[in-house]
Image 1 (cartoon, rainbow, N blue to C red):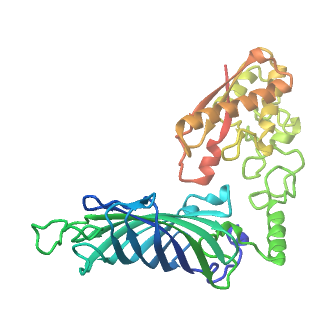
Image 2: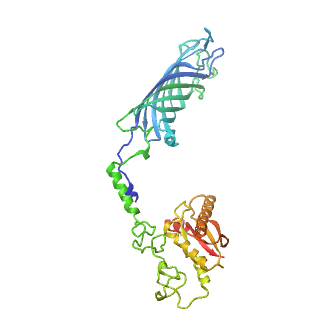
Image 3: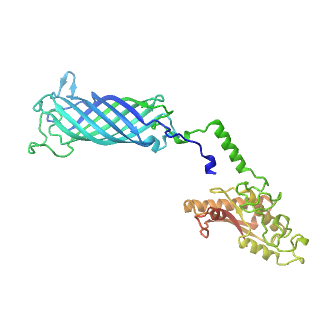
Length: 419
């Protein structure tokens, strides 16, 4: 069946490359020399990059950022003056949170990327004590990039990133050595700063979507392929004999109308007397065909045979996976029980619900009770007095092989017990 439903796919279904450009603010957090301050939002950062996505969720990007940092100004006055140029180049891993967390369930135009990686950089103060000093550093950075899809080829993006500079020797303002007791200044990731930008992403390629926005579930077949699949499904779901079991599962696809069948569509003979249940006037008492399947002499212990048939599990109502609606082919079991109870007013029955072992145990307990209640309601609807009936959920049937699909189907049932 899986093969019949498979649609053809292309070798590459989405574009993988993009170019990115943005500009905005920076902020040196530490270290800053005494009497030097920087504005919270210093306009002076630009970055460009190229990104390659391995799939819809993960990729790599190489980007370059540069700019300058200056002192804070207010009402024409300023703190200690400084002007520091910098650049960084980083290789980073990218995670597409939009696809990982299935944003498509509530939006198709908003996305979110996380990125992080390492690289090299340069800090170059142009004022104060170290104005002629170039500080070579390594960088570690991580950030978040919200996306707004504008078209097939362009997205508007923002980005907030934190960068750590390792082996930075002087303060951002160029006025002070960070650790004058260490000659070469090679110690730790002691420089901290952040950037906030707004920019654009340009997607390269000829496919309908870039990996950022590609959703595998959106693949569509051609009209011809779709028609072929629908016809195949119709053929498989056809139930030629009307017994409630589709032909592709039915091991006896030509059962007579009204025949009682099991989950595989095979006609049932509960008492094993050679007369199928739908033709047997005494389906739980063996007898010759000449008497309609009933014993030649009336058996006074008929209730005992009925009790044995029910209590030994020969009469069951079955259910689909995670369902409390009886399967059509098995509801005749409830009719047999109802007919017997109507003819034998002294007999009472408990309906017992079961579930397979798939799923949480507490959920299966509730499901088994719902299944028992469904059959209980069926019996009452046929006219059986509620005082003669009870129902209970018994949870998971652990007596079957839970690795077998057929065994799990037999576990999803409602059975009966004569009280």
